[in-house]
Amino acid sequence: MKLSTSLVAVKKITSTKPRSNFTDDELEQAAQLILKSEGIINPIVVRRTSLQSYEVLDGDFEYYAAARAREIDPRKGEMIGVFIMEPENEDSITEQIRIFRESKPEIGNNGNMDLRTTNIESRVTNLESRFEKRMSEVQAEFRHEIQKISDRLNKIEASLPKQIEPLEALNNFSLTDLTSKLKRINIKTQIIEAIVNERKKGRYTSFSNVVERIKGLGDKTIIKIIDNFSEGINT
Image: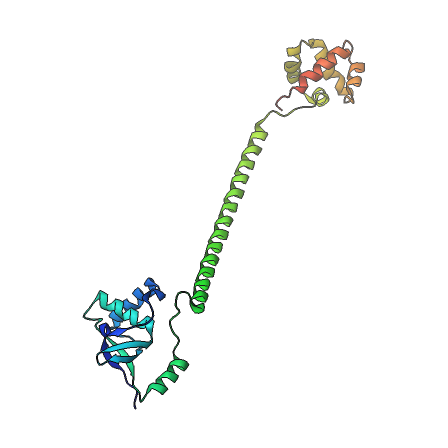
Protein backbone atom coordinates (compact mmCIF):
# COMPACT_ATOMS: atom_id res chain seq x y z
CA MET A 1 0.00 0.00 0.00
CA LYS A 2 1.40 3.36 -1.05
CA LEU A 3 1.95 5.71 1.89
CA SER A 4 0.23 9.08 1.49
CA THR A 5 -0.97 11.89 3.72
CA SER A 6 -4.56 12.66 4.53
CA LEU A 7 -6.19 15.83 5.80
CA VAL A 8 -8.01 15.30 9.08
CA ALA A 9 -9.89 17.81 11.22
CA VAL A 10 -7.78 18.67 14.24
CA LYS A 11 -10.80 18.44 16.53
CA LYS A 12 -11.19 14.74 15.64
CA ILE A 13 -7.69 13.89 16.95
CA THR A 14 -6.69 13.17 20.54
CA SER A 15 -3.40 12.47 22.26
CA THR A 16 -2.68 10.29 25.25
CA LYS A 17 0.13 12.61 26.29
CA PRO A 18 -0.78 15.77 28.20
CA ARG A 19 -0.27 19.14 26.60
CA SER A 20 1.74 20.24 29.63
CA ASN A 21 4.57 18.01 28.42
CA PHE A 22 5.48 20.85 26.03
CA THR A 23 6.29 24.47 26.70
CA ASP A 24 3.75 27.15 25.81
CA ASP A 25 6.37 29.26 24.05
CA GLU A 26 7.40 26.46 21.70
CA LEU A 27 3.80 25.50 20.94
CA GLU A 28 2.91 29.13 20.25
CA GLN A 29 5.86 29.57 17.89
CA ALA A 30 5.03 26.36 16.02
CA ALA A 31 1.34 27.29 15.82
CA GLN A 32 2.14 30.65 14.25
CA LEU A 33 4.35 28.93 11.66
CA ILE A 34 1.59 26.47 10.81
CA LEU A 35 -0.85 29.33 10.23
CA LYS A 36 1.68 31.31 8.22
CA SER A 37 2.42 28.31 5.96
CA GLU A 38 -1.18 27.06 6.08
CA GLY A 39 0.08 23.59 6.78
CA ILE A 40 2.71 21.50 8.54
CA ILE A 41 5.83 20.00 6.96
CA ASN A 42 5.94 17.10 9.39
CA PRO A 43 2.65 15.17 9.26
CA ILE A 44 1.72 13.32 12.42
CA VAL A 45 1.02 9.60 12.56
CA VAL A 46 -2.41 8.56 13.85
CA ARG A 47 -4.58 5.49 14.07
CA ARG A 48 -8.34 5.24 13.97
CA THR A 49 -10.19 4.91 17.24
CA SER A 50 -13.56 5.05 15.46
CA LEU A 51 -14.87 5.93 12.07
CA GLN A 52 -14.40 9.68 12.64
CA SER A 53 -11.83 9.88 15.43
CA TYR A 54 -8.09 9.36 15.67
CA GLU A 55 -5.34 9.00 18.26
CA VAL A 56 -1.79 10.28 17.89
CA LEU A 57 0.88 7.58 17.61
CA ASP A 58 3.76 9.89 16.81
CA GLY A 59 3.94 13.68 16.61
CA ASP A 60 2.26 14.79 19.83
CA PHE A 61 4.08 18.12 19.73
CA GLU A 62 2.92 18.75 16.16
CA TYR A 63 -0.63 17.83 17.15
CA TYR A 64 -0.72 20.26 20.07
CA ALA A 65 0.84 22.96 17.89
CA ALA A 66 -1.92 22.38 15.33
CA ALA A 67 -4.51 22.48 18.11
CA ARG A 68 -3.12 25.84 19.23
CA ALA A 69 -3.18 27.08 15.61
CA ARG A 70 -6.89 26.13 15.47
CA GLU A 71 -7.51 28.08 18.68
CA ILE A 72 -5.91 31.15 17.08
CA ASP A 73 -7.57 30.84 13.69
CA PRO A 74 -10.26 28.12 13.40
CA ARG A 75 -10.45 28.48 9.61
CA LYS A 76 -6.75 28.17 8.76
CA GLY A 77 -6.06 25.71 11.56
CA GLU A 78 -9.02 23.44 10.98
CA MET A 79 -7.20 20.62 9.17
CA ILE A 80 -3.82 18.92 9.60
CA GLY A 81 -1.88 16.51 7.43
CA VAL A 82 -1.55 13.01 8.90
CA PHE A 83 -0.38 9.54 8.08
CA ILE A 84 -3.14 7.11 9.04
CA MET A 85 -1.94 3.77 10.26
CA GLU A 86 -4.02 0.97 8.74
CA PRO A 87 -3.65 -2.78 9.34
CA GLU A 88 -1.91 -3.21 6.02
CA ASN A 89 0.77 -0.58 6.66
CA GLU A 90 1.10 -0.86 10.45
CA ASP A 91 4.41 -2.73 10.43
CA SER A 92 6.15 -0.44 7.95
CA ILE A 93 4.95 2.77 9.62
CA THR A 94 5.92 1.48 13.07
CA GLU A 95 9.40 0.71 11.77
CA GLN A 96 9.69 4.12 10.12
CA ILE A 97 8.67 5.80 13.36
CA ARG A 98 11.42 3.92 15.12
CA ILE A 99 14.05 4.79 12.50
CA PHE A 100 13.14 8.28 11.25
CA ARG A 101 11.13 10.05 13.87
CA GLU A 102 12.52 11.80 16.89
CA SER A 103 9.85 12.91 19.29
CA LYS A 104 9.80 16.49 20.47
CA PRO A 105 11.65 16.62 23.82
CA GLU A 106 9.17 16.61 26.67
CA ILE A 107 9.40 18.37 30.01
CA GLY A 108 10.77 15.91 32.52
CA ASN A 109 12.45 13.45 30.16
CA ASN A 110 16.20 13.22 29.69
CA GLY A 111 16.19 14.85 26.26
CA ASN A 112 14.43 17.94 27.53
CA MET A 113 16.59 18.02 30.63
CA ASP A 114 19.64 18.06 28.35
CA LEU A 115 18.08 20.87 26.32
CA ARG A 116 17.20 22.85 29.42
CA THR A 117 20.69 22.26 30.81
CA THR A 118 22.19 23.53 27.55
CA ASN A 119 19.97 26.60 27.66
CA ILE A 120 20.89 27.29 31.27
CA GLU A 121 24.58 26.84 30.52
CA SER A 122 24.23 29.22 27.58
CA ARG A 123 22.52 31.81 29.76
CA VAL A 124 25.16 31.40 32.47
CA THR A 125 27.93 31.80 29.89
CA ASN A 126 26.21 34.91 28.57
CA LEU A 127 25.86 36.33 32.08
CA GLU A 128 29.51 35.54 32.83
CA SER A 129 30.56 37.27 29.63
CA ARG A 130 28.47 40.33 30.47
CA PHE A 131 29.80 40.33 34.04
CA GLU A 132 33.42 40.11 32.86
CA LYS A 133 32.83 42.92 30.38
CA ARG A 134 31.27 45.11 33.06
CA MET A 135 34.09 44.28 35.48
CA SER A 136 36.63 45.31 32.84
CA GLU A 137 34.75 48.56 32.32
CA VAL A 138 34.58 49.20 36.09
CA GLN A 139 38.30 48.46 36.46
CA ALA A 140 39.11 50.84 33.60
CA GLU A 141 36.92 53.53 35.18
CA PHE A 142 38.58 52.89 38.55
CA ARG A 143 42.08 53.19 37.06
CA HIS A 144 41.04 56.39 35.30
CA GLU A 145 39.72 57.87 38.56
CA ILE A 146 42.87 56.84 40.41
CA GLN A 147 44.99 58.54 37.76
CA LYS A 148 42.89 61.71 38.03
CA ILE A 149 43.28 61.74 41.82
CA SER A 150 47.02 61.12 41.47
CA ASP A 151 47.37 64.02 39.02
CA ARG A 152 45.43 66.33 41.32
CA LEU A 153 47.56 65.32 44.31
CA ASN A 154 50.70 65.98 42.31
CA LYS A 155 49.44 69.45 41.42
CA ILE A 156 48.55 70.15 45.05
CA GLU A 157 51.93 68.88 46.21
CA ALA A 158 53.69 71.06 43.64
CA SER A 159 51.83 74.12 44.90
CA LEU A 160 52.65 73.52 48.58
CA PRO A 161 55.51 75.40 50.23
CA LYS A 162 58.68 73.37 50.09
CA GLN A 163 60.78 73.07 53.18
CA ILE A 164 64.28 74.51 52.86
CA GLU A 165 67.17 73.16 54.82
CA PRO A 166 68.34 76.02 57.09
CA LEU A 167 72.00 75.53 56.15
CA GLU A 168 71.08 75.66 52.44
CA ALA A 169 69.20 78.89 53.05
CA LEU A 170 72.19 80.48 54.78
CA ASN A 171 74.39 79.46 51.86
CA ASN A 172 72.04 80.47 49.00
CA PHE A 173 69.49 83.12 50.00
CA SER A 174 70.07 86.64 48.74
CA LEU A 175 70.59 89.41 51.28
CA THR A 176 67.03 90.64 50.68
CA ASP A 177 65.43 87.20 51.16
CA LEU A 178 67.57 86.35 54.14
CA THR A 179 66.81 89.73 55.77
CA SER A 180 63.06 89.28 55.13
CA LYS A 181 63.15 85.88 56.77
CA LEU A 182 65.41 86.59 59.75
CA LYS A 183 64.14 90.05 60.64
CA ARG A 184 60.92 88.40 61.81
CA ILE A 185 62.82 86.70 64.58
CA ASN A 186 64.76 89.83 65.48
CA ILE A 187 68.14 88.86 64.04
CA LYS A 188 70.29 91.98 63.82
CA THR A 189 70.98 93.44 60.39
CA GLN A 190 74.76 93.34 60.88
CA ILE A 191 74.58 89.59 61.67
CA ILE A 192 72.60 88.95 58.48
CA GLU A 193 75.01 91.00 56.40
CA ALA A 194 77.94 89.18 57.99
CA ILE A 195 76.43 85.81 57.06
CA VAL A 196 76.10 86.87 53.40
CA ASN A 197 79.58 88.43 53.23
CA GLU A 198 81.35 85.58 55.00
CA ARG A 199 79.96 82.87 52.73
CA LYS A 200 81.74 84.54 49.81
CA LYS A 201 84.90 83.03 51.25
CA GLY A 202 83.40 79.58 51.17
CA ARG A 203 80.19 77.74 51.86
CA TYR A 204 79.18 76.99 55.41
CA THR A 205 79.74 73.32 56.11
CA SER A 206 77.71 73.12 59.34
CA PHE A 207 75.88 75.28 61.84
CA SER A 208 78.92 75.10 64.10
CA ASN A 209 80.95 76.46 61.20
CA VAL A 210 78.51 79.39 60.88
CA VAL A 211 78.86 80.21 64.60
CA GLU A 212 82.66 80.01 64.39
CA ARG A 213 82.85 82.35 61.38
CA ILE A 214 80.26 84.99 62.34
CA LYS A 215 81.16 87.23 65.26
CA GLY A 216 78.24 87.99 67.56
CA LEU A 217 76.33 84.85 66.48
CA GLY A 218 75.86 82.49 69.41
CA ASP A 219 74.33 79.06 69.87
CA LYS A 220 70.93 80.41 70.99
CA THR A 221 70.64 82.64 67.93
CA ILE A 222 71.56 79.89 65.46
CA ILE A 223 68.91 77.65 67.07
CA LYS A 224 66.31 80.41 66.50
CA ILE A 225 67.40 80.57 62.85
CA ILE A 226 67.13 76.80 62.45
CA ASP A 227 63.66 76.72 64.03
CA ASN A 228 62.49 79.57 61.81
CA PHE A 229 63.55 77.86 58.57
CA SER A 230 62.17 74.53 59.72
CA GLU A 231 58.66 75.99 59.51
CA GLY A 232 58.98 75.84 55.70
CA ILE A 233 59.08 78.64 53.15
CA ASN A 234 58.43 79.10 49.44
CA THR A 235 61.35 78.88 47.06
